[in-house]
Length: 133
Image 1 (cartoon, rainbow, N blue to C red):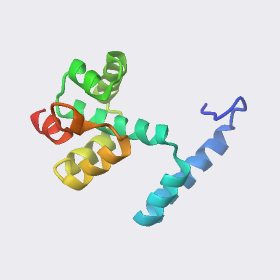
Image 2 (cartoon, rainbow, N blue to C red):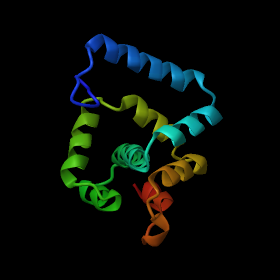
Image 3 (tube, one colour):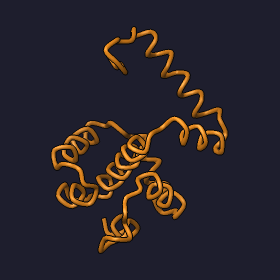
Image 4 (cartoon, helix red, strand yellow):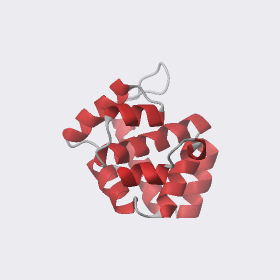
């Protein structure tokens, strides 16, 4: 059962919260969502979300565990765990959306900005890495 502090939430409360978050994501306009996410997510949370999105995209593109791990500065065991979960069908919707959007520079810019990962300082840009996989 998910919890934020030492106090566990009741299953019903968790379901209700998840439903409200889903409604917010669907109903709030893009500009409103951006402002709210900027206000409520820490830089660490932005980075975590962006790295997970990139991880899913790079795995879907067939990147090796070693390369993905080094590029995203994640442990190989984390990358391998996501690979196993994706093989089991987890992140299916995220993967489909990322693959449909990965060719657009807008999505890649958003991921770079979210992650604040210094791709320009590396030998390969995020664009090249994704294209090569």
